[in-house]
Amino acid sequence: MDAAVQQSENGFFKYVWRFNALAIAGAATTCILLGLYAGLTIFKEETRSRRVTNVVNVDPQDKISEEFSLGTPRPIVATTHVQVPLFRAQSYSAGSVYSKESRQQVNLLFLNVSSNESRWLFDGVGQLLLDSHMLFNKLKDAPDQPRAAVAVLHVVVERDTNGDKRLTERDAVSLATSATDGTNYRKLIEGIDQLYTVQQIADDKVLVLYQKNRETISELYGVPSMVPLMQASVPKVNLN
Image 1 (spheres, rainbow, N blue to C red):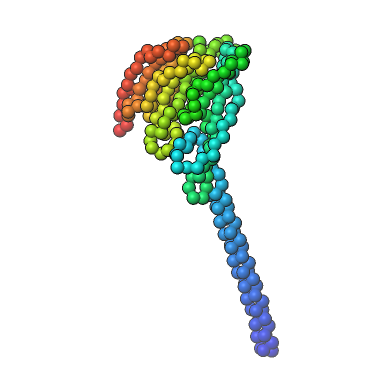
Image 2 (image 1 turned 120 degrees about the vertical axis):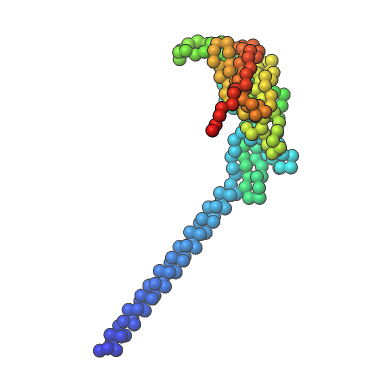
């Protein structure tokens, strides 16, 4: 009787051991498959192309593939002109395992829809155009209030000032102006470390707040002439 019980117990434990062995093998296989999947996902993530914004690569050592394209025309209010952005798309290596892609605005085409004549804001594509602000003959007090565009302000990165071989928002910027047809381009402020705001605050005034040489400056310009009216340093605030 005891021998039969012992034999039954041995058979039971054999089944338990076999089940445990199969469970351990299954768990190990699952872990290996999960590890392989995670590794493959990480590899794909590291080797895929990365899209970046507001970056123009100017490193002569990089192999850069470039393509230029025109964007969507933007009507200039109460004029016969439209703005058409020119984009510079770049693909280049950014390390040993992945590449980067960027598509940045580098120029503006001003097109007269009455005569079909056009002109470029810049002669070439060696700059990064961060933003353009339209100025009007009057501030908008109501949604249906008529007004006309009278000038344009442009925020431009002209050169690599921090030495990273890229044109980015971390470089010094220039604030420039032009007429609504792209003529009479001229710089207003150069070497801006940080541009805080460009805001038309009255029918005939634009406020520019910026930092240059560790000094915060408030400057007013007349509209539409964009002649400087007043400039003052913003006093430092006690942060303690």
